[in-house]
Length: 236
Ligand code: URA
Image (tube, rainbow, N blue to C red; front, side, top):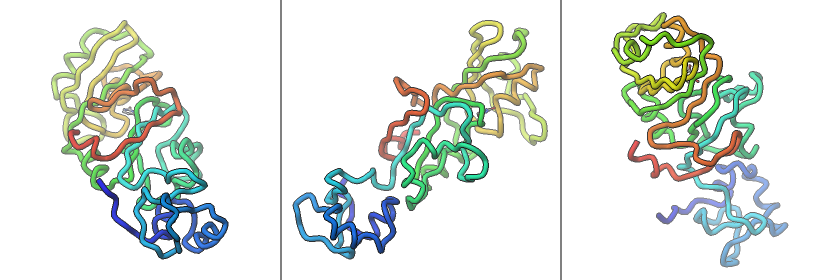
């Protein structure tokens, strides 16, 4: 799809490169150029793919989805005061993008694995709505040996978590060994997996999300991410 044309200063500002006023200086210095060497001014209407910065294509336009392999120790928050953020793994200028990039739901600080981020507000709203039931698989390491009845309890659709008004939807537990299991859930309640195991008298010591719908981490290492277009998630 051909991107629509917007003022050059607006485009670069929305991608977080620079304030509108700095564009004129970058043009004078020859840092911003047109792919076909057409003359440019701050207010020239341009398409995203016509512009080069230091000879390189621009960052992806809005409507992007980031699939990140979140390491433990990073927080899914925009609040700088809280410690290291998942946004610290992205280029610093992306903090200035408009529309803003946000995580699709959250993983706890001590949970690793597949995290989606997007600047598409409609997609974000859809994927985080309580009515949206996409399957997510978590690998849990447990403090105590499983006692054998957890799969039935989790599958029953009757498990109540403290402070909740409705029971958890049926979830699928697959036992790996006595202290390791995968749990597939279709909701995204606060600390859900840790609280589900707590509700059956266990304690999660390590948690990793390995999939979100059909998306998996593939070869991505901790701290790495890949980017795709929001249209790629239309099926979710
Ligand atoms: N459930 C949890 O307990 N923690 C997460 O980060 C995600 C699901």
